[in-house]
Amino acid sequence: MKLVFLIADGMGGWPLKELGNKTTLEAAHTPNMDMLANKGIVGCCRTVPPSMPPGSDVANMSLLGFDPSKYHTGRGPIEAAAQGLKLDPDDLVWRMNLVNLSELSSDGIMYDYSSGHISTDKSVPLVELLQKELGDDEFTFYPGIQYRHLLVHKGGGKKLENKLSIRPPHDITDQSIALDIEEFGKSPLMNKLLRRAAEVLKDNGTKAVSIWPWGQGNPLLLPDFHEKYSMKGAVVSAVDLIKGLGRASGLEVIDVAGATGLVDTNYAGKVEAALKFLEHGDFVFVHLEGADESGHMGSIKDKITSIERFDAQIVGPILKKYPIGTASYLVTCDHFTPIEIKTHDAEPVPFILVSDKCEASGVKLFSEKNAKATGLMLDKGHELMQWVLNLTN
Image 1 (cartoon, rainbow, N blue to C red):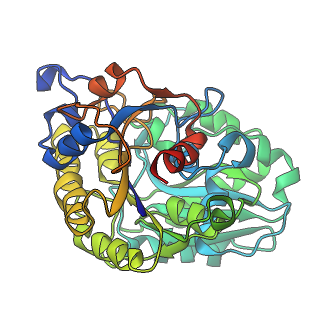
Image 2 (tube, rainbow, N blue to C red):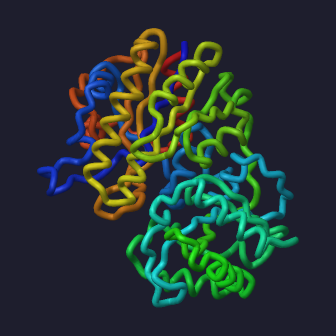
Image 3 (cartoon, one colour):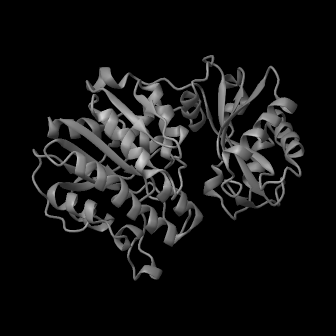
């Protein structure tokens, strides 16, 4: 039996006055997820341990069946794994955004964590320029996708810089960066690098005016997924975070041309890649980023559109190829990204599990409220994978 995980990153949210006190999930037209909810088990799962921040890194590690309290070292190391970087155990890896700030000082405001969703063809030359001007035996800049890049501090894992607490830039949109400037100031090395980078980026023709290193940690080590769960699996995603988790755990990482991580991603390409893998594989983890990005932007319209496209262009086509009985399905999100706060929230996420071995819940509409009302709660997200396997095998 094939096992398909369909993940709409950040799909969960809170009721909005603009939608008549409905969430964006409730307001969206989702006939495929509603049908699955009616035929499967519906409940909630805590993907983020109470002691950890509600990031996609932590939450998706849980969904893949690995305990983040044991294996998580930082956001940067996961994305470094995606690029296959060769690192020493004491290296320090930072996720590095290209951001738009009012100014690089305690009076500064974080205008945009993505520099206007800068395109990869414009961001990569900027990171290459940073490497040319500032790269040395201690720091190396690695280009990634769009606004998401990496900074490696050679031997930094045992130094002061590993203890700096820098907030994710998507958590502080339109807010003061004073706390982070103070934190960077604790390290003369990072403070100097930040300001030199701003000089390099000056007048480059884009909205990227500064680097923003955050989510640092030592290199990631995960158990082998196949050895742990006896499944040949793959991940399909536009973002390095998911690719890194996949590569670090021995899953096949499938690249899809035109996959952007936005509302206008290549849905058909992702479906085609997933279906092709399932011809010989057992498990596929299909990840869509659009709802999360829409939540960070505070766009109700785009988030509803992302959810509807996920339902119509991902869930529907895969279900058509592999009807219930030929595959088992887990449909969920990794975390909430409520429009009101434009960032992540650690509330337990709603999920649907559908298999010919599962009793129907009878839930008519898939929503946060209806999932909570079933009373089914999995408190440890990293145990969800084994729970699913126990019910479907």
